[in-house]
Length: 360
Image (cartoon, rainbow, N blue to C red; front, side, top):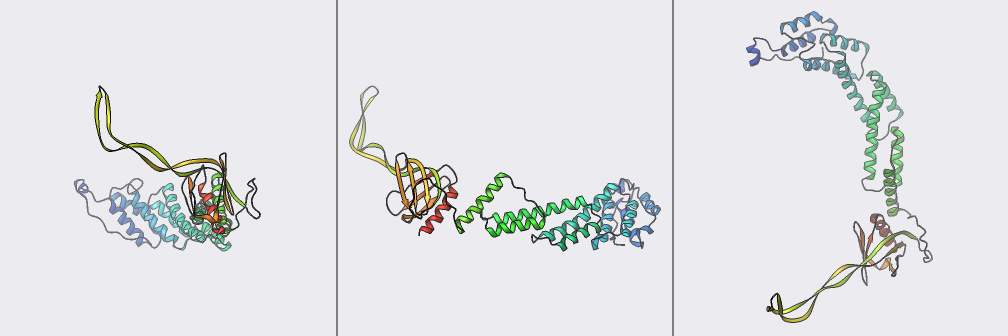
């Protein structure tokens, strides 16, 4: 009998005070009774009840965890070959009666055991993102061999396949780029696992954005119609409403220099002694120059505002620094503009990087 023997325990202080044997030893003797029998069906219910009576145990009430442990051990051995045949089902039913386990408890233990086996098999099947016809057939056979309900088996498969699909998306989106190859792989995993991807509007926008980022860096950037005249062969990649700022020197005050003193002239009126040298305190401050529309083309940054138009050729840009709300442009000569955006600096910066690199 595939049940482990256990040693009896000594009486506790409470057992000694009540002059009784430890109740747990009743299960130890019941285990021995089952182990010594050739089949579960050979164990008489009267013998089990006699052991329980000797220890003052009501099997329907006491030692539920210990009784479930015996049932679980025998069930685990029956499921070693990942199936339950009629003889094993009959033996389990008999063991359930001997241990006074109710139907809910027996069904729970059996469900936990068969679901664990099916869970492991499904996990292995979906691991590579593909489930072949042979693997599908094997899972169906396993479901039937384990007498696992169709609905419950479907729930387990759907949950694990969806988790594998989510992992595939997480891996593909880790760099915030989606290549055509990654797109095709995600679709193939979805098809093979029979998992329908449910994406809301925000998720779809994010996916489209990552596809565009990949295209900007690796493919042909789709041009837009700017509505203004460009050079022959020049294409426009983006247009944004921006605020054009530059560092300008600003005077903040005029101060005295040299030794100073305060001389009282009248009540509440003082005269400050010292020499006024006209020392100006000035510093550079980021100052708004204009606000208007910025166009990014394959050759230039074109700014059009109410106070005038400005152009920065891409091949005159030494470097640029994106921030959360704007981009600082470093040119080879002249003032360096800082362009403040209302939204989506990241996308504009990616487009600028591509155009700047291509402009050489």
